[in-house]
Image (tube, rainbow, N blue to C red; front, side, top):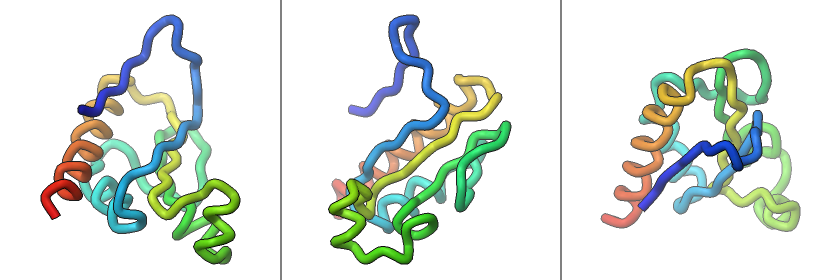
Length: 106
């Protein structure tokens, strides 16, 4: 089961990361389901953006070097913008759930 919660005791973060199973293909499955959150090669600005470091900011490094640096192929980074949290959650959670379901069915 996947869930994301924001509580008063949770740290307030503008950028967070998570790893999906399936490397670049897993990340692509998540990205293909997003509609509110936009894909960007770098993070920042007032809108929420998502990035896949293995194919953007760290593409020049080999897989072993990225792994050594803690950047596995399935890593996704998100920079949270000014949108309503409910809109972001409604966009991201189904995308991640479907990507996870797709991996499990393979």
